[in-house]
Amino acid sequence: MSFLDRHISSTRLIRTYNASTVLQTLYRYGSCSRSQLTKLTGMSPATITRIVAELIEQGIVLEGRVGKSTGGRRPVYVHIDYTKLYLVSIKLLRDDCSVALLDLRGQILSKNKMTPADFNPNPLIQDVILAVENLLRDCQINREHILGVGVAISGVVRSEVGLMVNSVNLGWKNVPIAELLGRDLDLPIYVENDANASALAEFWFGNAKDTANSMYIKTETGAGVGIIIGKTLVSGPRFMTGEIGHVPLVQNGRPCRCGQRGCLETYVYLDDVLARYREMTAKAVSRSAFIELIHNGHHSASEIVGETAQALAFACAHWGVLLDLDVITIGGFWGGLKKEIIDYCQKYYNEVLEKTGIPRQIKITNASFGDDTDLLGAAGLVIDRWFVPFPVLER
Ligand SMILES: [Zn+2]
Image 1 (cartoon, helix red, strand yellow):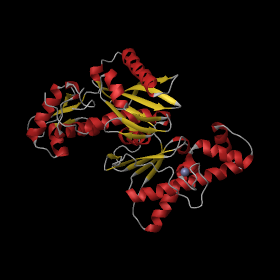
Image 2 (cartoon, protein in one colour):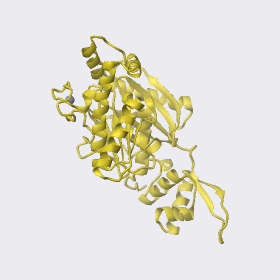
Image 3 (tube, protein in one colour):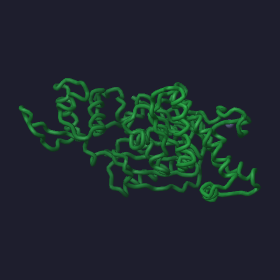
Image 4 (tube, helix red, strand yellow):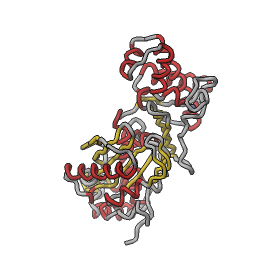
């Protein structure tokens, strides 16, 4: 048994694949009768009756209203008890460290921004532990009711063991985050790369809800991609899926910090973009001043935005068709430019598809949650792990 699952108490279920399927169905469909669950899951009525009884006994599922009879006994609808379990999410980025408490539907109930004095792993982890303990105390939540703690962090993460392999953003290498946090918090800890977490935020709570295949393109602080295929996050055998920022995309494109040309990173990383504006005009601008220039149709700003729009349009069309996606979300600064970026990418995609003759619709959109995306993603990660059955624990 690893430290990831040793804390699973009866509240958090001793689960089987079938129980997980029933919970997922109730989460997706809301209130269901046992016969509806039988139809939706393909399981036998006896299995559904047994699993629902177990879930009721564990206090995860409640019986609700009684439906109309269609000849036999009147059906009783069952639903998940949303007042029973909560999620803790943590965002660890150099410019924003926050902790939040959420309900199972992804509503943020309380959120605290941290102001760490020291970004080295040990002091920062200690600060995080304190912040989570304060949050639970202030919200008067017993930790037995916390399903798990999700952590969204920039860099390469070995998610299955909660190890931060390398984070340029925080300057960390090989930090066992789940082990360090889990030891003191005594809760299950799940860690994921921020782009992957953002994809989960959209999948569980946002624009990509109810779709099978989606992608989140993280922009502004870098270029990372989170991909969900067949409702499952794709991370790859070396956890490198989506590390696409420095693979040249635009032929003879803009020079990048990495020494190559045309990387997506150099088109979407805001510091690089503002530096390019400075080179073109010999004037420095802030983020907000640059937005104003764009909206006023300033020549150089518009030229720069046009280049980024084209780079993102290439990315959406290539990766979207390659992966047969339903939804692509462009997060961060660029997703906020509806006309210049989102509409442009959608139009380009539609034109490409029309010419290739592929009868396919795809939705390109901005992020659902703005600055809260990482926190929602960390919460989505906990939900995701809740529904992915761990080996059944014998007790
Ligand atoms: Zn590069």
